Image 1 (cartoon, rainbow, N blue to C red):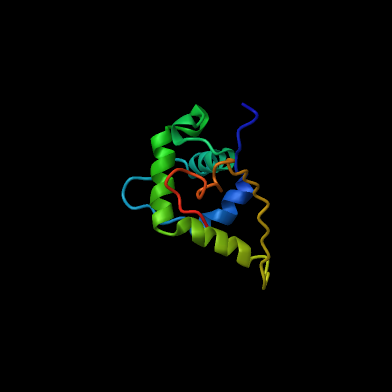
Image 2 (cartoon, one colour; image 1 turned 90 degrees about the horizontal axis):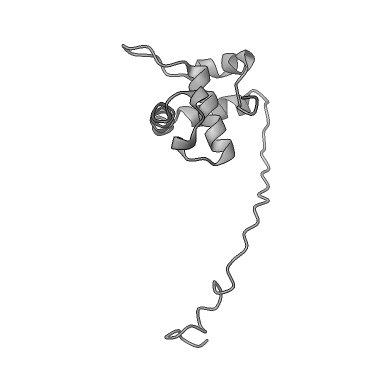
Length: 115
């Protein structure tokens, strides 16, 4: 499948210093699992909808859950951002949400208090 997302070897080399040490049993292929996690998050899919090329969806979810709780993904982002030496960050949210027409009519509903 050409539409799948795969991290390059160069990208993996930049991320590798942030990985936790493996204790006991070796981890499943980091490149495959991280590529799967990114694919799921980029496309807004449920874990169980992960393509088979990324491995079992339970593996993707459990790695994402464990590493999120340990703050590993946050350290990755902070470490990658620090490489660019930006002193100030400006973020713009271009989200557009349309409210249902009844969302603002609380006072007009039965039992509502008139303003």
